[in-house]
Amino acid sequence: MSEDGRTPLNCTEVSDLLSAYVLDSLEAGPATQVREHLAVCPDCRAEAAELRSVVAVMAEQVTPVPPPPELRRRVLDAVHAERQVPAAPPTPRSRASRFPWLGVAAALLLAVGGVGWGLEEHLAGAASGPAAASITPVEQLIASGRAQVVPLSPVPGYTGRAALVTAGSRGAYLLLTGVPKLSGERSYTLWFMRTGQPLSSPRAVVEVSGPGAYRLPEGPSGYGAAAVTREPSRSDRTPRGPVLLSSKL
Amino acid sequence: MIRLRPGSVSPKRMAMVQAAGDVAEDELRDTDAQLMWRLRSRDEDALGELYDRHAALAFGLALRMVRDRAAAEEVVQDAFLTLWRQAANYLPDRASCRSWICTIVRSRAIDRLRRSASKESRDGQLAEDLAGLCDTWQLADESLRAQAVHQAVEGLPREQRQVLELAYFLGLSQTEISERTGAPLGTVKGRTRLALQHLRTALFSATQVEEVEP
Ligand SMILES: [Zn+2]
Image 1 (cartoon, rainbow over the protein chains, first blue to last red):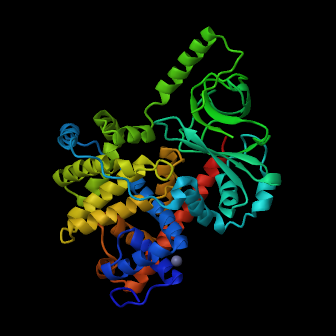
Image 2 (cartoon, each protein chain N blue to C red):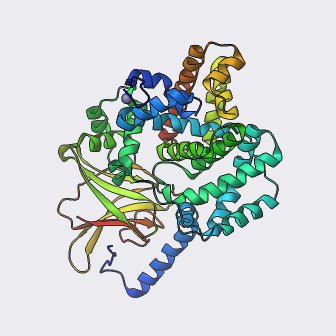
Image 3 (cartoon, each protein chain N blue to C red):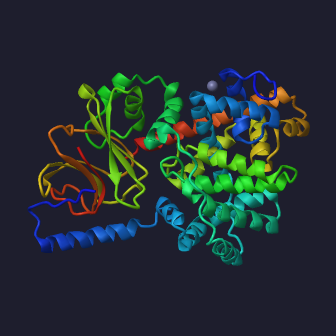
């Protein structure tokens, strides 16, 4: 029983109410019951996140209307007046957000759950190299605990994230998220390097243009470090662009 | 942090490389995610840039909800102030800045539509909405996404679409929708659920098609 004496809802009952809940359209009583269930049920939480993203895109139906020009000044003045007020502290993060893509994976899994992809066939069918840009099966692999995940650390201020995922005979993958899609010849290039001072023989492993999961032609074993750079042109055998993410292996 | 020091590159070449890298940096400096990062360090210019990009959508949404220009302006102002305050909680991997702004605008507009609700409970709801938002379609191109959403909503059965729009744009509760449409409460709940499910399926297939393109 919950605090106010109601019987806790089960997953089926919550699933019936979840759409109204994420639309903020559910009455206070049932909304509290749903909230209590979400606090203890990761499956329903993932479902709620997925539905919230559907709700969020509803705004795309709206015709943009330019606000009156003086509103910009008013907004910035209001913010300026707040400058002395410190930023809200970050909300406590769940364990999963150390690897934020695990949360994304959970949501994506629900989205594709009904499609009936088998992980094995999908990975077997994944082409080598940049063509394979489907995040889900790789994230599924991570979630299954059968893969080794090495996160690459971003340079200070960089908001993109990357990780190397190796899963024995199932291959090795680069997972890249939160990076803008590049146009033209530019690419995100993953390099493997031998250890030593300085690191030597950088080897371009894969060149990609945006976020995704990419099968690698070889795994990182035998190398001492990995880095992702943003390269001004493709098929360059020498790193030219800035290092965005890196890790010792 | 590891620096690449390929032995084969001369210092002069390295300087050129550095310059090339800086150009690329300039071109990419202002993605929404990077602007949000700057907001965390209290950069007011970054807020100005985000405003320039998203204020028209924010104002359009606010106007459609509160249906009064002066009220919509207040909603937008309040929303960008909230964005400023909440920036530290933003995780670019989970949601686009655009979705965040729309979620905040809608919450602030509902504040006005439901004056009876306490500000504290609404703030709590917004924090939960933002923290729980996981934006599956953030990779989709914006204009394609708008088109896909439009088609998906148009494609809903009329009564599902009505329920969804009353809940989303007018902030009506399930009971209020039942009263307004004359449909039993259970039916309203069922339609709400089907509406979001259909929308999700339509959006998912739309983004799948898009990912196949080179
Ligand atoms: Zn559950």
